Amino acid sequence: MPKVLIYIVIIVPAVLIGLGIAVYLFQEKLIFHPDKLSDKYKFVFEIPFEELEYETTDGNRISALLFKAENSKGVIYYHHGNAGNLESWGARAIDFTSKGYDVLMYDYRGYGKSTGKIKNEKMLFSDATMIYKKLLYDYKERDIILYGVSLGSGIAAELANDNHPNKLILETPYYSFYDVAKFHYPYLPNSILLHYQFKTNKFLPKIKSPVYLFHGTEDETVPYNSSERLEKLSDNVELFTIKDGSHNNLNTFHDYHQWLGEILE
Image (cartoon, rainbow, N blue to C red; front, side, top):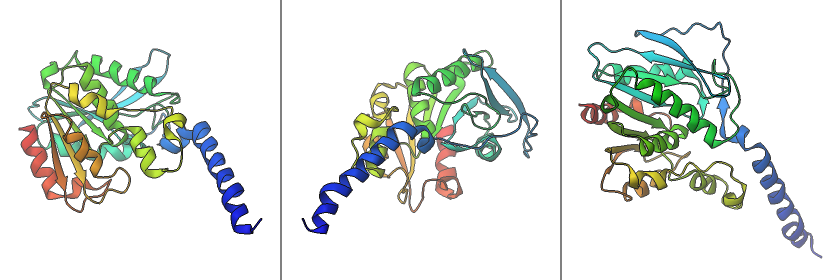
């Protein structure tokens, strides 16, 4: 048998099978990229904030920061992306406090000062729901705006579906997690391998609150057409396109701040 044929018939399938097994067994390491912080770490930001801690139903601690605006109009409940922690994500709070909104950000399990380990999608949503219920002690639900970035967009979308926030804003959202996996690993049976679904496309058509999407045309992590397809799911969804924007830099564009200001008015 020619060597090229051997390579095609034996080696390529073996490599794909090996990659598939790795994705199935270690997908948490592929999806989540936390940066840990010591319990004694002191956050420093230029705007007023309060450090909070929430206890989960299984005894873990979720680290959070509440940034305060003068004469607050309400609160942005912010779900960040799959990397970093509050130390880096906290710099985004001024985008909202400058427009008159408090901001509640939290770290997922294993990120920053948060304890525990992410084991499934249900766990992530349970933690997010617990914090949402706590927010209702201090804010009327009509004054809560859900904001999700990348990974956090799926969590925020499900929360909006199950509750009645004022608005839902998603930055670089995926159509579904399967859709992103298919984009990055087109030759793998992702529908079988993935433990995580995050079906944003399932929830958006059911959400009664206004939904706003921000996406850059040069996003190589979550393709721009994800938001184009999400917008078509409901008349309640509006897409704001950031020309030349990529996955992590939308807040460096003037258009982003102009449109965000209009949405939050």
